[in-house]
Amino acid sequence: MVWVNQDKCAIVGVGATKYYVRGQSWPRTINDMICEAVIKACDDAGLSVEQIDGFAYYSTASAGYGEKMDTATFMEMLGIPEVGFSAAITSGGGGSAGSMGLATAALMNGDTKYCITVMGLQQYHKRLGLAYSLSEPDAQSSFLQPSGLVGPGHLMSVLFRRHMHLYGTRREALAEIVISQRENAIPRETAVRRNPLTVEEYFQSPMLADPHCRLDYCLETDGAVAVITTTSDRAKDLKQKPVYIHGAAHGGRHEWGRAFAWMGMPTDEYFASSGHKPVGQRLWDMSGVGPQDMDVALIYDHFSSMVLMQLEDYGFCKKGEGGPFVESGAVRYKGGSIPVNTHGGQLSEGYIIGMTHIREAVEQLRGVAVNQVKDAEFALCTGGPAHLPVSGCVLRR
Amino acid sequence: MSLKAVAIPGEHIKINTDPYTEPFWQKAKQGILTAAQCGACGHFRMPPTSYCPKCRSQDTKWPDLPGTGTVYSYVVCHKAPFAGIPDFTYIPVVVDLDGAPGARLVTNLFDIDPEEVTIGMKVKVEFNPIQDDWMLPIFRPA
Ligand SMILES: [Zn+2]
Image 1 (cartoon, rainbow over the protein chains, first blue to last red):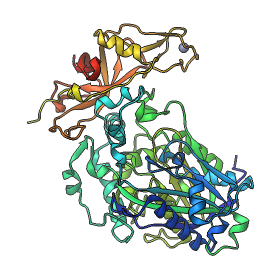
Image 2 (image 1 turned 90 degrees about the horizontal axis):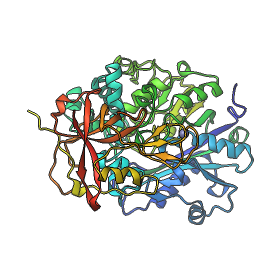
Image 3 (image 1 turned 60 degrees about the vertical axis):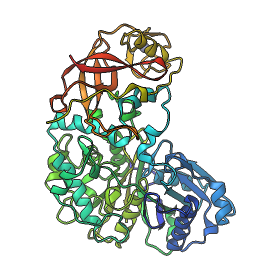
């Protein structure tokens, strides 16, 4: 059944700061960067900042995982006169793509006319990759932390090892994901890592949690990205070609649950996965399109192996065939059947907890991307495989 | 040549408990591996939580398990998990616990060459003294 709100709302503005290597954004503050992204998004849309009247966050409205995004503070800083909506999808980066659904709900309910979704990240005081090891465990994480799985990349490596065992998936597939995204980052001035990378260099990268080497981990960067959504009626009067929200879903099943913070996923189908399959199925059902209709896929890439497992869970290939699929060159911008992370992704461009993927989808569908997919009409964006909810959205030109 | 994986030094490991998890750790102190089992329907759940997800009962049993299990998945790490101590090789591992179908423990495998670890291998528990006089279940090849 096609979603009642299909194409009724659109992304009309995007703004971003520069992406900084971790810690180098200081002495800027995180709120300074978030406000810059919001102001630029308004300029891009042709709106006044004072017209903003709603905030649809994800990641529990945390900026990174240590600091908070606070609507009242943004109103005070930016002179926003009144808001009618301020809410967040829970958990972490898993909700990034789903935030377009939250914004749609707010807009269609008439709570807001011009809604901001934003993420800012500054790893000056605290590194996200060590989030688990730096704090004393609570009663639940006392069943995880003593194992020395110090961060998410270590934890997800356990899932990928099972995938290798079940399906014969090779590290060469991860190398292909990392290298293809690096290729995409090379021409992009926004990208933090632009030096070419060879397969040999990939295999020389230090092992952090075998089978994940350092290059399988995303970048540690600072910065902010904001988008503005509004109803499609209002979008017609604005500066940019609207990018329609064709479908958006967040959630997931009990069998995935707390995922790699739990390790209790009862079957291989869930354990050796990204946890996205139920949400992916809902997304295709509600949007009336499928993986074969996507022109470009912006797949959340905190760790390379999760790109591979999401490609399976969204049906770009069969379960277990992600390795050969990727190794065939299918995800390449040049010559691939489904160009993936044409912006370089979080592995090579910058890591702003999923927002760079939405930014790239908008640029692709406006036809102004650096690595433009010709005549791109549909883009898939996903949120980070982790603790539920996870999410995806389909955007349309 | 590869070095044998070792146990993480216990003096660096701290845990916390709550009333629903403490029985697990109290049994470990006595050298017994246990897992939370629903007293009403028999379903195992780990880590321990305050309700059975199958039947919502709060009646919980803590059976003595044989202390053996099967490696479900693992990774190999060569860098110390905390700053300020020399690097060593350790193996975080997810173990399916014998005698507790569906219950897994996220733990370490030690006293083994990393090259020799396989998914499906049998392992047996030992207890590593950690901070505050608690004992942490870890595993060696069976
Ligand atoms: Zn029960």
